[in-house]
Image 1: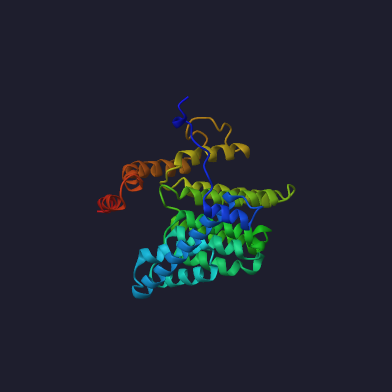
Image 2 (image 1 turned 90 degrees about the vertical axis):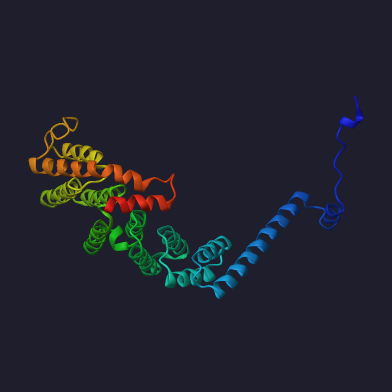
Length: 299
């Protein structure tokens, strides 16, 4: 065999040999990994310092604020990160994703009910900045999970949660593509309350059923992307309570006339909007193009 085709064993460099002599029990690959980590940290530090200089000279640089916050979050410098977020918030509305990250970061650092008021304030600031169904859903989930009175379904907690759900519906319940998420969360919350009511308390259970039914009726009277599936869910729910004899019957069979009428009107409004919604919701086109489509839709 031609010896020139046989690769020789790679020889360790002097740098590696020196490292082995200093740390005979350390794997050379570990040294390379440590070196990579140090390089990353150094690059992060340089990037952060550069962005600090840029923001000092030009506080109105939106992209620099975003990059600075991202870099600090990656580094885990929580105190600087808080100040950076506050500084940007004074000049610009933060995007929904940035508010979500901020609230989640603080929730991961907080301890129980002590941190709840401050995180609640962050969500309030976020939903004031932007109309975002996802942000509202995060807010609603946070309150249900971390507010003791809501979690325990006390009268005060239930009232607080209902007020928040109604605010969310007012703000984002008409969102054609995503608004259904808030309606569904509202129904699930009320359904959970129903299961806490003693089976012998017929009056209270019936009152709660009427409350859930009313939410269904309201949702089916507005145009949204999941209108058809909402009707299916409604009929299935009514069938469980013996109101609709067959959940698999014709589309509006067994549904009261006024609910059917409201549903048909909502369907007509939805059909008139579908094409426009698809145009402004496309993610494969630049934001500028979607903005143009939106302007055409509202003119």
